Length: 415
Image 1 (cartoon, rainbow, N blue to C red):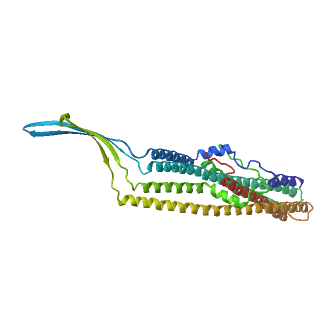
Image 2 (cartoon, helix red, strand yellow; image 1 turned 30 degrees about the horizontal axis):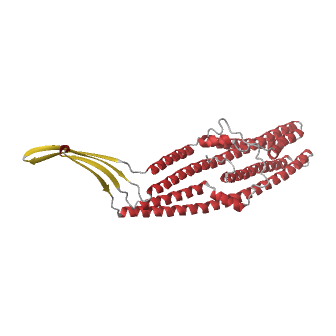
Image 3 (tube, rainbow, N blue to C red; image 1 turned 45 degrees about the vertical axis):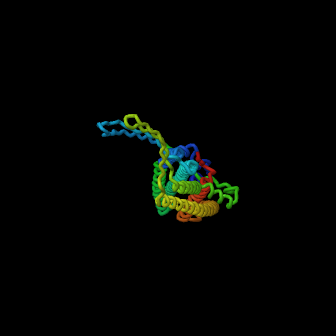
C-alpha cells in the first residue's frame, strides 16, 4: 500500500503541482513559421504588387506618342510629276485638373492598403498557429494524464495480485483491478491517437515550428492574478482601433474615396498636345505646327464617377460594420476569459478537495474499512478532476494569449 500511495503521489499530484514555464513556442520560431506560411507569402507578393501599382499611378497612364507618315503625291500640271512627302509628329496627353496630385494620394492609399493586408495575413496566421498549438498542448496533457492513470492502474493491479496470492484479497478485487488497468489502457490509446492527430495538423501547417516533435507542457502554468492592468473599456477601444481588420477596412475606405475623387476628375478629359513637321512636294514646301486634341465627355464618364462614389459609400459602411463586429468580438473574448479564469480556479479547488478525499479513501482501504470498488470510484473521480483542472487552466491561458495577441502585446510582427 505504501508503494501504491507513492505511485499515486508521483503521478496524480504532479498534475496539480508541476508548472511549465514555456507553455508557448519561442517567438523567433513563431516568426519563422509564420513567414514561411504560403498565406503570408501570398500576402507579401500582393504587397509587392501594390507597390508596383502605386509606382504606376504616380507615373500616370499617359505616354509620349511618335507618329510618322509617308506618302507619294502625283501632280498633272502640264507634265506628270510625283513628289515624296512625309510628316513626323510628337504628341503627349497632359494630366490637368489636379489629377497628378490625386494620383499621388491614390498611390499612397494603395501602398497603405497593401501593407495592412500583409499585416492582417500575418496576424490571422498567428491566430491559427496559437489555436493549433494549444490544441496540441491539451491533447498532450490528456495523453500524459492517461499515461499517469494507466501506470497507477498497473501498479494497483500488481499490488492486488500480490495480495491475492498472499490470501489478503479476494479474486473479485483482482479482477476489478485488472479491468481498471485495461480500461486505462484503452483511454491511453484514445488519448495517444488524439495527440498524434493534433500534432500532425500542427506539423503540416507549420513544419518549421517543431521539426521533430512538439513536447507538451507537463501542466499549464498559473494565470497571473490580473489579466490586464487597463480597464476593459480602454482595452476595448484599443482592440478595435488597432485591429488589422479595422485598419484594413479603414485603408480600403481611404482608397475608395481617392478612387472616387479620381473618377470624378476624369469627367474632365485630358487634352493631347503635339508638334509636327511636314515635308510636301519633295521638300519644296515645309510645314511646322502644333496640334491639340480633346475628347468630348460622355455619359460613360459620369456613370464611372457615380459608381466610384457608391463604392466609397460601401467602403464606409464596411468600416462601420467592422467596428461593430470587433467591439462584439472583444466583449465575447473578455467574457470568455473571465469565465474561463473563474472556471480554472473552481477546478483547482475541486481537484484539491478530491485529492483530500482520495487520501482518506486510501487510508480507509489500507485499514480494511472500504473495498477496492470504492477506492477505484474515488480514484476515477480524482483523475477526472485533475485532468479537468489541467484543461481548464490551458483554456484560460489560450483565451488570455488570444486576447494579448489581438491587442498586439505578443507576437507583434508588423514589420
